[in-house]
Image: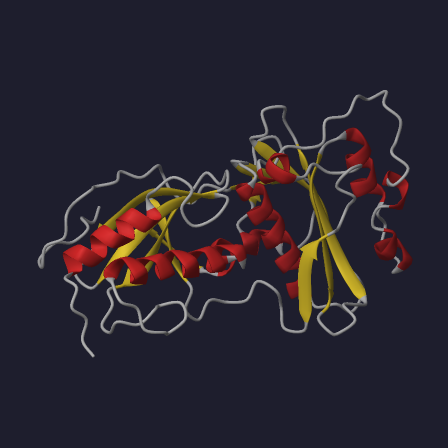
Length: 300
């Protein structure tokens, strides 16, 4: 059954659903929705990431939800399900896993046939820490701020046990534990075999805040166990860079020497070591326009 809504009506409904305050999900901040001849572009910011992102949304051809596939009765109902699907995609790592193309000052995300950041047979996630003692939770964690702690404050009893399962697997967890105590830990990641047991643990990476303004993150550790494919360490580094960007870092620096760093984008830095910019593009110029059959988003 063909739809009875005009493209102008669809665009208006999508703008209503995606540009309002609190639309979609935590960490999403709408910038604009613009029309192209065959689709719309939803342009948004994500958490404290310095980049501006865009994702294409096809105009509907049938009155069915783009999220559930069920029938919908109006353009607004269809647009509401666009918002629902986008919320689900963002919650499951859309920004991290999508292919990226630089366009007009923003990063265009393509979720189709995107490479998996986790190598086949492995999984990467955050090292769980006690929210009350070792990390900030809620809005503070979303803002990417490290745990404030006086240098003279006693070490929480759980700090010495953090990541004990990694230590039991033969990995040195001294650096991330020290960063926890100092209140500088930005993220601590672990790699493990993707099976029903979620083990054995095979690698880890840790980053820290390198400046008080929280514009720079330092990659302090990127390790995989002997015999583990190098792709796992590369994936750990890529995840660490994405974590840094989402926390608002403009740059990631490191003094460690592992062969996967250039492939991720690290380059020699002034003063030694390597550095990587998390900003993929210059700030965008957004052109707001109504839809017409011949309209298009101007290229630069």
